[in-house]
Length: 594
Image 1 (cartoon, rainbow, N blue to C red):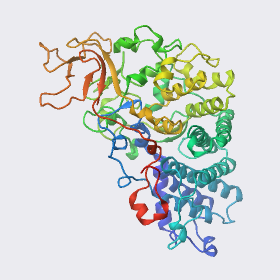
Image 2 (cartoon, rainbow, N blue to C red):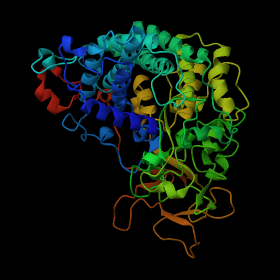
Image 3 (cartoon, rainbow, N blue to C red):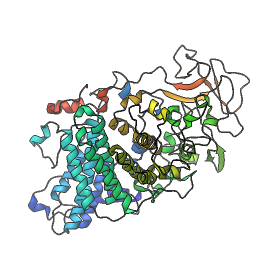
């Protein structure tokens, strides 16, 4: 991440040399003399201090740790009855906002051209929108501050402003950003551009439009379409620019995964990225997170979700006779090519000391058998803590296409042309051959029954399928469940691959070698070298509950953490205001149910 790391270091040195601390509000007659605000270079350097608001690499590649399609080796407190409360809540921090507001207030030195000042104010307002969008998603109503506060300012102790006021203010900031940030394209994909602002605007407006539509208790459903229209318009602005396209250069079997393991952002598709730089020691821990048998949460996909990946001809996998009892090696064949680029299956291999090794799902890590590879680089030397050299996409063109398709479908105006340009193009990149040019007319009963029984629009169902598959493990799913009012899906069981029988060796990747045997209580003998043996008895030798069992006791789907309840209540759509902050300012009140 050479560019951002370097510029943040430079701004620190630059500001140390200034006569005044730029984080303290200066009298207006002194601002003109401040070198920060008196030159375009000063404004640019200051604007780099806002970038810490963006999510870092780990926040992106672990962002789906709490989702309906991911099992984990620990149960989140947020879904454990009685475990989460206002006393442990977090996120009520406002320091970054004061920095932004101070810049906006003081960016008025006429030695800098008006166009340049508006450009950097646009960037500041983009980051203020990002900051507040995170707050609204987490807490709902929050106090809106459009100015830097000083000590003893009475607004420090005001109550929360209505969601509608804050979201309108966020939209005003994004409208300013998309109007005044210069239209130049950043080849490094590391700084905010007008295209990034439009893309983020489509994300924000889609969230709010669908939130208002499905959370009818807010009484805001009548305003939902206005937000959905804004989402579609913003996404179309990026599409019509013609700067970005889906990356297809590595073919159907590799193009998708390239987006997540490349050292440099795949510029064709990525609009904004966290950029790794090995020479500066700016690396991430993605390999470690998805290979470590002891550290991290052990994220794996569930069978219910893997079943939503279409067959290569575009028809549902669950329309195949006998899918319910199909073992892993068979169920992954002839599927959407994104599946092989997301989990270990068939010919997956890695490099160890220059040797290529075929690697099946490994149960010292995976709990369900659906072992993720999406963010994992091939060289196993990078599996230790922060040695992964991939750049991490924060915004990419595929999301923009999905935002456009969903907004248009929610508005009831999706056309065949829209479908082909968005979902059709994404499926084509994945090698799917059918259903690419026309809006679907038939409902997939499995998808409707298991996930969205209240949705009867076939195209909307398919867009939700596509969003889940295309954006899996990129940190979108929890927000999607919140805005669709589908939090109850987080109670879904952690189910895994189908096991036909106990004590029978299974070859998971079709390389002719056995990989795993499931047994109860006593390991079958003789043992086979290189094979994992997994006890699925309900209780262990010590009498404790075994976290991994089979659904039919001696066969069936793996059930992970079958005896640990996860409970979703409507109060969970918002986090509680942290108790310590309410003690500081009682006017904040508390979110319902907390």
